[in-house]
Structure formats: C-alpha cells, structure tokens
Image (cartoon, rainbow, N blue to C red):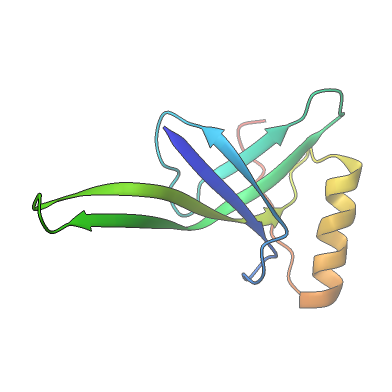
Length: 107
C-alpha cells in the first residue's frame, strides 16, 4: 500500500519533506524507520509519531474509502545515520532543544 511519510522535527512541527513509499503495512507510533538512498553512505532515521488517514464517505453508496495515509515521522539519530542526517538532527537540537535517538539494540 502507498504510504506518505512526512518528516518533522523532534517534538513535531512543520514538515521538512515527505516521501511516498510502498509498504506492506502502516507504521505505528514508536516504530523506527530508516531510509537508505541510492549512492549515499548511511541512512536517514526517524521515529513514527502518529498516523493520519484522510477518508472519503459516499452518502449515496453508504460506503467509504481511504483517500490517503500520512505517517508523521520525527528526525532521530541511529548508529548508521548519514553525515547529512546527523547535521540535520544537530540543527533541530539547537532550534528545539530536543534530540531523539534509536535505542542501541538489535545491532
């Protein structure tokens, strides 16, 4: 299913950027997501904050559909974060006074 990932500063706020991603299921609050980009060393890391579902209900049909799914993800550090991602996290820590990090497990 197509899920739109929206990347926000730790603690929430305006979206920095977003990516449409095909996923087998909808991520849940607290899930860790790592994005690896072709030709880049390291990953972009995020912790899921919440999920937004935009729905449409057709009164005539008496049924509804899901129009789109957005997953709000907060910037976080992991042992595998790319240098550019680390810089972004440092900027957010300076601005917002908050830094999220992956637990050091499963490595």
